[in-house]
Length: 225
Image (cartoon, rainbow, N blue to C red; front, side):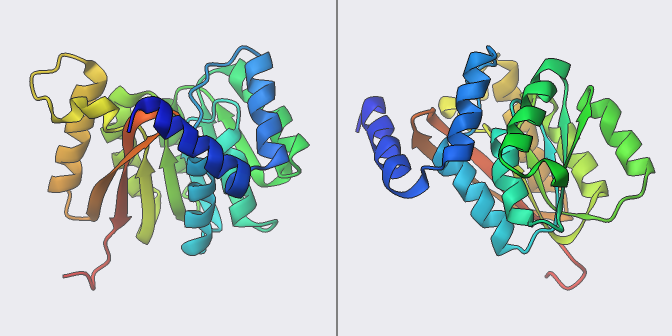
């Protein structure tokens, strides 16, 4: 099947299974504000929502807010008593995200922290918050391994860590690639392989966003053999 076929399937799934007025409105607002169209796809957003519900997540950390599209899905999943902390580098993106979250009726359960994530994460760790049940990482790819290491300090056994955009059109398998994002994906996989506190896999995806995939890791507990 061609890339256009993948997009056709995504369109069918969105129209029949995933369509949601509030999240659709967020995408339109992001476009109007000139934000890059690098949000997760609607089926992926719904997947994040269902995953968070499946693990019973009440506290979610998101690294990379953009316009808040994935944040809306996650905030719905944690429920009115839950909390999402999301980190965004660009103040303009955070402003658009705040408007989208408030419009979707979930703004009261989301905290947006503006600044470089590698500056925000040490501050968040020093606050000694309750562990996060799920961490979704979708920011600058070259720091993915660093973000996972920080996520380990902010989670508990059984927590889930998702890292988006790691397959990168297959370049993850090319050890000769000079693309820093592909190199970062390989570094991430090497970390996931070597880190004893994580059990992980990578799932390839195709769709309107092309060929990519995400890493899925679970934080191990003492009872894991």
